[in-house]
Each structure stands twice: as C-alpha cells, then as structure tokens.
Amino acid sequence: MTLGRPTLLALEDGTVFWGTAFGAPGESFGEAVFNTGMAGYQEVLTDPSYAGQIVTMTSPHQGNYGVNAEDAESGRVQVAGFAVREVAGRASSWRASGSLPEALEDAGVAGIEGIDTRKLTRRIREHGSMRAAISSEDLDAGSLLERIRSSGGMAGADLANTVSTPEPYGSEIVAGQPSADRGRVFRVAAYDFGLKRTILRLLADHGIGCTVYPAETPPATVARGGFDGVFLSNGPGDPSATVYGIAAARELLGKVPIFGICLGHQLLGLALGGATYKMKFGHRGVNQPVKNLATGAVEITSHNHGFAVDPEGWAKDGDGRALTDYGRVELSHRNLNDGTLEGLRCLDVPASSVQYHPEAAPGPHDSRYLFDEFRSLMEAGI
Image (cartoon, rainbow, N blue to C red; front, side):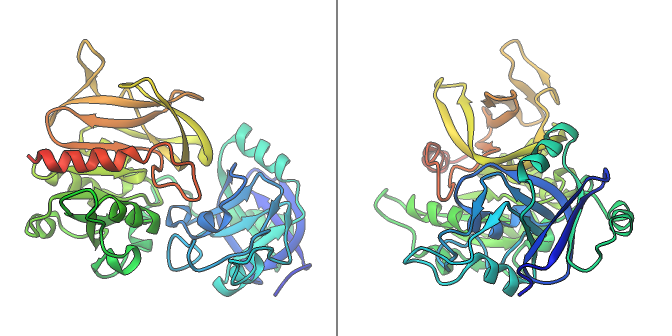
C-alpha cells in the first residue's frame, strides 16, 4: 500500500495540490468532479456512472465505516481516482469487511489525502469540471500537466459500453426474486449503460423482474422478448455519443412502456428529438431539491451527472409541453437550485424518465414512488 507516499493532484488549468497517497501506487487520469454527500463513499466508488472521473468528497472524513460486499453498486471500484481530506485507517463498523484504502489498493485505483478539498471544490465550481491526474510517480508538476492536457475529455466520450455487462443475465442474481406483494410480476428488459445494483433491488421490491442486456443490444432483440417494459439505466460519458442507446430508445418508443434514470433520461430526451449539454460542474451528491411540477412536492434527491437535457431543445405548445415526433412531452421536474430539467413524461406514448436517482443508496428515499409509476405504465400497456 502507498499510504503516506508524497502524491500530486494536478488540474488542467495548472492548479496543483500536494498530499499523500493511499490505495494503489501509480497514477490515474480523469475528469475532476466533487460529491457533496456526507455518507455513501462506497456507493460512489462502485457506481459505474463515475467511470473516467477523479472524485473529490467535500465531507472531510472518509472511510470511517469501511467497506462491505452488500453496499457495492457494481462488481468493482469504478472511479478513476479518489481525493479526500482525511482517510480513516481503521474501519469502525460491525458490517465492515475491509477498509477504504484496502478497497482502492485491491482495485488498482490511486487515492490522495491531505489536500484542501474545499479549495479544490471551489476551483471546480468557479472554473468547471476539468481534466486532472493523481500521481505518486511523476511528481514534476510541469510534466504531469503536459500529459493531462494531452488526455481525452468527457465531452464526446462514449463510456457506457466500457462498463456494461458483456452478456445478458437475470436480475435475480443480484436482487433476488421479484416481490409478488404488489400483484402481477412484470418482466422488463433493462439496458445496462452502467446499471447500479440498487436499481435492480428496487425494481424487484416493486414486483419487477429484469433481464439485463449489454448496452449495444439491438432493439429488435428486446422487441422479440415479449417484455412488459424497458428500463434505460444510468451510466457514464456523453449521452450524445451513446448513439446505440439513443437508437434503441427511439426504436422502442410507442411499442413498449419505457422508464429511464440519469443517462437513461438523457437518452430518452435525445430519442424524442431534444438536445443535451455539458454542465459547468454537474450535480453530484444526495441533497438536491427537485420539484415535481404536477404535484408541487419538493423531493430531496441524489444525483450523479455532468450532462443535462436542454429544456429549450424542442418546440413547445401553449402549455409549455414539448412537441415531438412521438407526441406531447411534459417537462415534469425541475431542480430548485439552478432550474435544470430533471424529468420527462410522455403524454401520447408510455414513457417517462428522471435525471436523479429514485433508488438512491444510502438515501434519500423521497422519490421511490417513481417505481410505482413505472408499474402503472406497464399495467396500462400500449
């Protein structure tokens, strides 16, 4: 383990942070972002949506309760690198099966501690997410900066197929058998663009069993399966570069009920003829207020995205609803911090999506009603 070894974190604008290493030796390159959650670092580390990103946690103490197999959102650590103010050397939880430094070391992922994470967060907020690197090997800031500036960025990056399952599988492998407590058990095809395990667990809890398909599965394959619905998952990268996901959503719209989360929301928006854009620094954390425009309720929500659907990407009717080739679409949810579009609800075909995470683990749980709404779409059919 590299704990205590001098380490450098550099941003593409030339900003340099000196700290000490933990986790695996070496270096990592990715987009520097920050997460405002006070808990849930293991879920962050194992969320495939963080592929290609160096994540900074704004809460200063990380690793306090260790890691365990039950809380992982995928089969491995997905982040490119991890930056914290202070890492706990000892896990203080009866559930822990290992420590945070051990988890990063086993995954071959570099971490850095002892830096001013408040300064780093403010830098990203003021100047936007940017390319970065962590290195315990190349401690020449000029040399590392040159390599950062020659690395690829997130805009235009197709990453979903790098984290997707290579073969289809049944969700009961992760989530168990779907609950029959809610009545009929529905069968859904889930596109894995970076699918989180908790989504499968929540679907199962709501009486929905899934066959999980690789990201580039042709929509004709799904259409032949006789499924009750289709789920478009979260995932990393630029949605406009995930052309196979857009094509699948476009082909299946109007033929089967569709529900999308995060990247799935963005892909649905693009399939409906809308547009997406890269946000300045994105939303990452568990405390974003989102208003359901239909009910007026404000939900505290969990987010992980650096792209968003442009609410001005369509022509509108007199009531502000988007006019698309698939009929009218209600812009259903808005972020109360910055007005970002957070949800879509099709009015003439059975499809809806949200930008945030109703399955959020460890929380909040304000938005779990959306899984019931997906059931309602499937109960109504086409």
